[in-house]
Length: 350
Image (tube, rainbow, N blue to C red; front, side):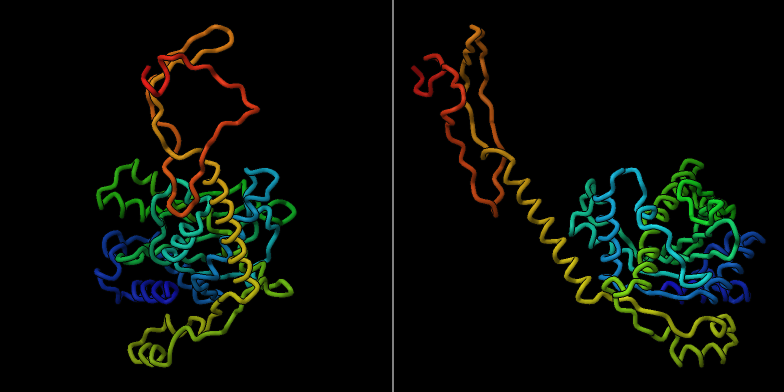
């Protein structure tokens, strides 16, 4: 779990016990600002209510995002706004899922988010730390541990402001940049333009998938749980606790002993199967309308009733036929106006 990795890394660094190969940021750019962030993150993680979505549960929540977006009267309205006001299950919550598996699921079902992709784009694990203890805004910290790389601190945090009525305003978001992470990336060769791009990507990724934890919270309080099955699971094993006590790793002892693992039930599985079948039907219907099979049209003259004569050069027409679809044969339509071809344009070469 990314949750356990972060508690281990932050606890070790604050206790002066971290190793450079496990925590390069702390050893390269140590600062008071970084220490304060890590102290905040560790305390929040220890107090948070923890949810771990398996790959099917994360994909299910994501299909709900697609469905809301497709049905929206105004395409520009965020899916979170359509979902409505959702109450967090506690003042601090942690929601984690497999980003690589989610990317694969999106690509396989041809999600609108992958329309310009030629391969899945997810990588590693992602976790959302949602903190609403401060009046006036919700603090959203998204952590992303990419495959083959150590976890690093986020380059920025989002503060989602609240309206006077107390509801979240997704049009009023402040981006809090980490000076320590800016220095870290610049020491690794990033230019100011690279830093700006990293910040932009992190903001977009954080905002685009913020729907997943909020959809989870909404389903947890629905009468039928929205087709999901939460199960209590042990976060730290008895061996973890024994090792923590033996080596004085007090940061483990202060963390939550269990978390909720979220899986899908029959209702959610049926929804995903129905949606996949409907999208496949639509895809085949669109492909079947792609026109006649690709063929060669010889050079010829086209005579119009107005007297205009156009020389049409030889060219290919139509599309390559998909192997799994029946061939569409185009024949003459008697109700259509026929064009008169000159003798020069006949296929007999006369």
